[in-house]
Image (cartoon, helix red, strand yellow):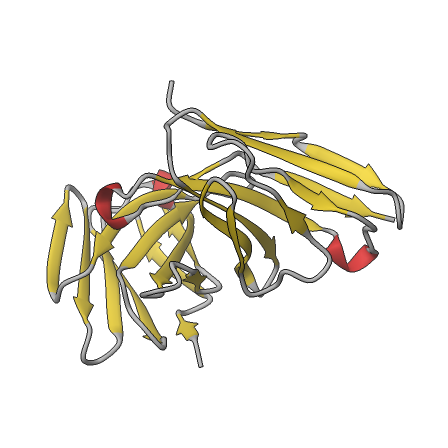
Length: 110
Length: 113
């Protein structure tokens, strides 16, 4: 079957570092994506991993281990504007279907 | 400006009254798709299209129709809406860059009474 798991909610303090984990099970794998979604808005693309390892983009980094079906999104130097939901998604190889996790709602406290 | 345009932003209708949600992209993307987002369930794919006249079912296609007659447009049709189709809908497109990252429209909040 196809399944993506991520924590429902996380809380962190401004200036801190937070890691949001995502585990997945899919019949075929063709890339893992992270999206940010502010309340009432559309998701926006953050990062993409298709090979194992760490991808760094400014304050945000994303890691992938295909053998473990595991990814994480690392947010450094947290800001209040980072309060949002973070969606993990996997694209299925062959069908090009996208499977999304239910999202992790991150609250950044002053 | 590169964008995906969805209309309407909000829609209230009654059971059984046919409706269409429009989606248009100006990025010449081949891939387009529709999602619904419900609390606790996340984004679920309804239909997707790899190119003109090529469409495929996602995970929750029942009660929905789509068509892709032109590359830029991908309307979502609810022939006979029911209350369980009350949801937030997103259209998205992808051109293959960054592994196929999705560009989302601003969403349509649909209420079926």
